[in-house]
Amino acid sequence: MAGPLKRIALFGATGSIGASALDVIARHPDRYVVDALSAHAQVEALVALCARFRPRVAAITDETRYVALREGLAAAGLETVAVAGAAALDEIAADDRNDTVIAAIVGAAGVASTLAAARAGKRLLLANKESVVLAGELLMAEVAAGGATLVPIDSEHNAIFQCLPQHGDHGGVRRIVLTASGGPFRGWSREQLVGITPEQACAHPNWSMGRKISVDSATLMNKGLEVIEAHHLFDLPAERIDVVVHPQSTIHSLVDYVDGSMLAQLGQPDMRTTLAVGLAWPERVEAGVAPLDLLTIARLDFEAPDLGAFPCLGLAFEALRAGGSTPAVLNAANEVAVSAFLQRRLAFLGIPALIERTMHRLPALPSATLDDRLAADAEARRVATGLLA
Ligand code: NAD
Ligand code: MG
Image (cartoon, rainbow, N blue to C red):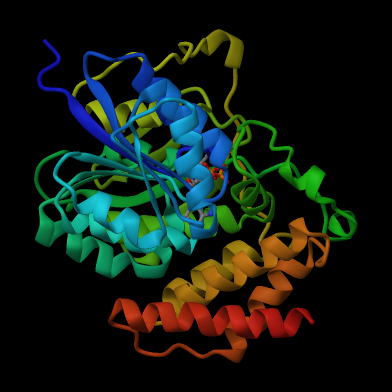
């Protein structure tokens, strides 16, 4: 009844999205089988996942951990083949022994494997939003050329994907509205944000996520990256992408049509729904997510984002409007800033300050190829790291 088995390659298997994806996959052994898993450095966690899901191949992108992975797999009595290095992911993405790639690596490090999956015409479940910010035009061109099916694995974009007409153009769309929880510091003033610690920033009120995206949610850079992501995925200019703060995180986003209709997708704040949509679309499968109880939710609130206390959202709109190399610079400077903040080398309010200084140091350059984008990314990391010191 479920049709042929889908064979899944999961990049970033040891992360938060990786765990949610494997949870959904494990519920449907009649539909999904794991062909490949990757992790960056966590050999033990990767071997444990291999023991459970028995993939054909396991990749560790930190090459210094290759021997540990090979020996760990052998010690566990597994036939899974160990491979290492970022290029190994490109090969897996292009391999026709899998038909579905879940791009769940964090950061620009995921860009090459994401592009490779698009080029190979896979069903691409795309969580790695930084690769869209870095190389959105290139990605959408590869999707079209390769005949890939892209399903966004970001709750907002997945909601819009579900609310847009599945056939025809988007001519009747007036604008899309991305909802934002507002993060743990919603309603706080700039003065209150001065002494924020990584622990406070990572304690998201609604979602449980990896540390980088948790900090991005606290600064509102996550919404900024999502605006740029939406621009590419749905081919809409900045003027037709709005952001509204919605603290309950029940409405995951909305599409506003010219006839006055507004369509929303609602659900629990649980990425398994999004992943189940991506895996089964256009069918629907059980995701292990409790149904929404509207009477328990009782009310839905909306407010405008505070761009004064949270400048990162405005910086992202600025980068989108500047175009060229600037979104790559924004993303790279943010990765440097968040990493420094998590290591307690930069204050919370230093994050937008560092990104802004890096952006203004590096004016927009025309940026057509992946090499151009990667050069802008590298230059922004160099400048941001220098400004930190
Ligand atoms: P995470 O930190 O929990 O996991 C990241 C994964 O990427 C791990 O498996 C890690 O081994 C791997 N990784 C890290 N650095 C790498 C590198 N240099 N090369 C290769 N692999 C590397 O992150 P997460 O929260 O699961 O987020 C993953 C992606 O999904 C991010 O782009 C994030 O913005 C996006 N996303 C996450 C959520 C969520 O709920 N967690 C929601 C929407 C979008
Ligand atoms: Mg999101």
